[in-house]
Image 1 (spheres, one colour):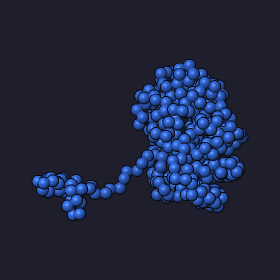
Image 2: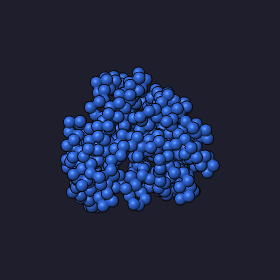
Image 3: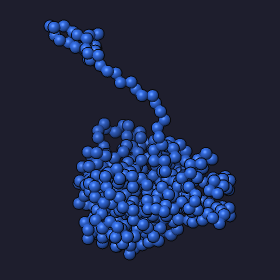
Image 4: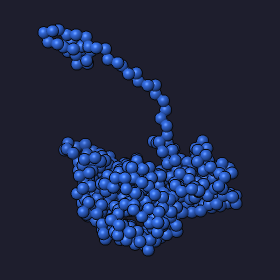
Length: 410
């Protein structure tokens, strides 16, 4: 046994009748000393796995989620998943969840689709990765909004695409400016429901112009349906995909801002003619996440809990935004401008001489997590400002938090 183990671990060589010989000494590479990892995407995430701080972007309210109901549903579905047959789940996503997502999109977003067009993904990032692979655009050009979501810009760049920043105005993405700057682009990534981060809704004429451009030039549109469910005033405009009659739009949504980013659950709706290709791509490279979690979300949607939760959150976030605006309005000096967006963020515009990255970094020392607006911009001069999310505010501490933040800004 000792000889067999020495030979198996390549310390010795068995030569049959010629005997057993000690192997030539292998070079042993030493394991380098561990050092703390550099922060990952520091302009977006301050730290992973911790409770959200005041003003932190991208996370729903922790104090208003129906944890007891969700725990009961999750426990039941986890038990069922443990007792289910040991086999591979559908890589496109649980059939019940895909059915519920299709029904929800038809009701809330005006998107007519069948479950075969829906894929369940690992959040928005997983859907974006599938879209980039599935469209097979190689190193072609892509439009993104300026300012726009930094993660989208990073993902397209890592895929080797030539990224062009297209400005936004009160009507959303400026299609004419995109054509003038990069007419040969084969992809546009937009947030038409609520522009990230400024919050305006893309106007109907601008939507029709964008769709006409896509049909005319055989290009694709990825619709990031950012915060569409959480329109705080009035009814949300239908999704861009609801107007698409040429099969040029891939619609992406997630449950990160409405249920929890810890789920890592998103969804994508593809045109019918692409559903087979994307299904094979998901099966081969990016199958849907844990089936038990998917079934819990399906029940949450099917029993009406999701829509009721959204209605409660809209009222809560609207109230918290008003409180934050009032607090900042009473304290902010003339050199600092405060403006509300249609989304979940309040924008604090800073003088050009300020550094929003430096201010945001120093704010972390006081338990505050505003995000620097300059990180969302590509074209100079980058607007200096802070994005303050309204979801996780403590009303008793808010005056002190606002005062501290404005002192740092000064």
